[in-house]
Amino acid sequence: MEKINGGVTAPSGFLAAGVNVGIKNTEKDDMAMVYSTVPARAAGVFTTNLVKAAPVKWDQKLVRESPFLQAVIINSGIANAATGEEGMRCCIETARAAGEALGIPETAVAVASTGVIGKQLPMEKLTAGAKALKETLGTGREKAREAAVAIMTTDTKPKETALTVTIGGKKVTIGGMCKGSGMIHPNMCTMLCFITTDAAVSGEMLQKALSLNVQETFNMISVDGDTSTNDTVLVFANGLAGNPEIMAEGEDYALFCEALLSVMRELARMIAGDGEGCTCLFTGRVIGAADKAQAKTIARSVICSSLTKAAIFGHDANVGRILCAMGYSGADFDPDVVDITLESSAGSLRVVENGVPTDYDEEKATEILSREEVIAVMDLKAGNEEAEAWGCDLTYDYVRINGDYRS
Image (cartoon, rainbow, N blue to C red; front, side):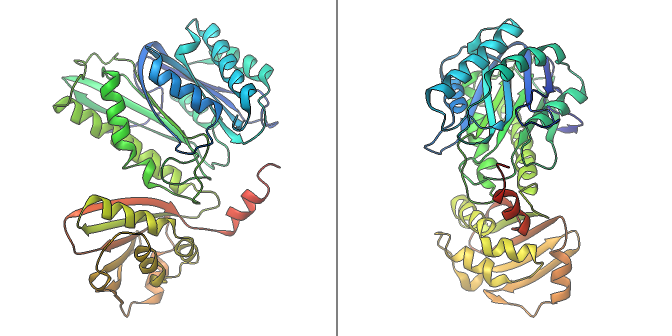
């Protein structure tokens, strides 16, 4: 695999754009479109929240029933959640407007929204936006960035990545963009993610790869413990790379799955590292676990702990909080053999050995905890399995951002 400078327009046949239609009443772009020049296979994973936004319901139906997808149109500023029948009509009208502009069926257009829950969308702006997006679609790097910026809400930076991999003797490209900063929690979070690839892969195998990889990526991040109404991950595969179509498990499927995992992992880490108000990415890494479930459960518990997150913000090596979060995770382990090491670009420091805090250097611990990524490595000494989860520190700004979010 080779990482490249790109986003959703990196694979062959994909175009993107972003425009401002005034949904947010700012000068920032607030609508985006990604379009494949040919019909694409599609797969999706969606929020587990019982309260599902209208676009989630629309996209779930398309992924189940539509023979192909060719575009997704996204708005930021209003989530189109808790909007009843009118919200669903807005989805259908938005898809229809985009389909008419692009010359494709409305059932080939996915719809996504992010923003304030409970407000109705201004349909006249979305309809105009669909036409404007069609006129500005392009394949260049800047077009991918436009789209990535347009889907942001409280995000502080656009989130994109791309890579190439050789499958069946052909160069396959996978690109992606996502948004997410708050209302982020395992089991899908308030995030939108759109991944494009020119790989030839069946819908069944595409869905299998996505569903498998989401368990190791987007379901291993948390910012604040809130699971959103709008979470959507869509993958479009248009087959233009010309590789032999991946129809079953085997070497080609394994290569594709690994490359897709790499893209999703990087995007997931970007979301965690841009948590609302945060100053650092906080990684919980469990090693020496008896099984994968044990490792994942403990890693998630630690990065979700509000007290641990606050300690990371204060650059305070209060290791009792990590041990505590491990203990209430629900996973069974022997606390009397656990080692904990703090790591960052400033170095590495063992702070717990065999379940007891060491006589560590507080100044060195503070230095380690002052970097842009902090890692807590927890060795259970029970086996060979491991897992990572990603979160961020908890800061004053998180409350400020969410205290006046609607204003």
